[in-house]
Length: 68
Image 1: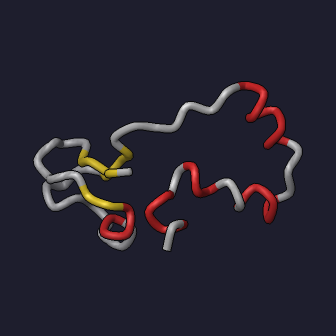
Image 2: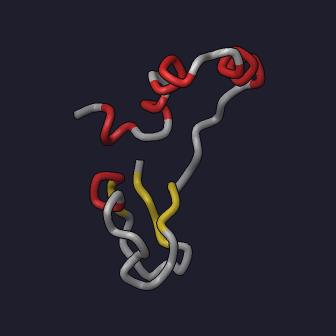
Image 3: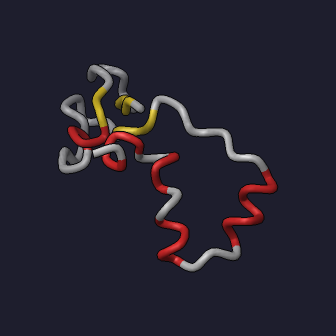
């Protein structure tokens, strides 16, 4: 997953590059290019998880760090 600046003047970057960046070089905020689609049944299931259990699902939103 790549992250892009809200101002559109920065090349897409990996999460590991964005993590400690703060603002994008162009002054914008870095956001994912797209968000994963998560169906209602899955969200309902996640509502009942404890915090440690829910962390196991971060690979859906942070694949570049979780694959390390």
